[in-house]
Image (cartoon, rainbow, N blue to C red; front, side):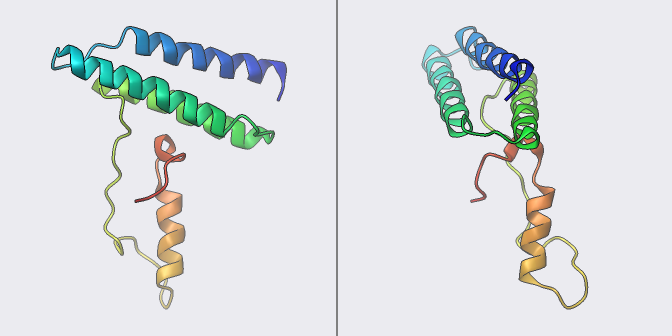
Length: 121
C-alpha cells in the first residue's frame, strides 16, 4: 500500500467515526440513535479489519469506492444499513442453453458497489 492510499484509508476511517459520533436518526429516539451509532462503528471496524491485509491496488480501490458509496448513501437516506438489492432468483437474461452458472455470474456482476463486502442471502 502506498503512503497516499494509506492516508486516504485512514481518512475514511476517521470520517466514519466522526459521522457515527454526530449521527442523528429520523425518528428522534435516543435508543435508535445509540443502536445505529453502534452499528456504524461495529461495521467499520469489522470491514476495515477484514480488508487490512489487502495489497492489490485494484481491490483496495474497490474497497475505498464501496466505503465512499456507503457513506454517501447513508448520509443521503439517513440510514446506516446497506440498501437491499432485489433481484428475482432467475430474473436476469442469459444466453441460450446456459442456466444456473450463468445466472450466478450475472448476479455477481450486477451487485452494486456498496454491497460488495456483503454475502448474498
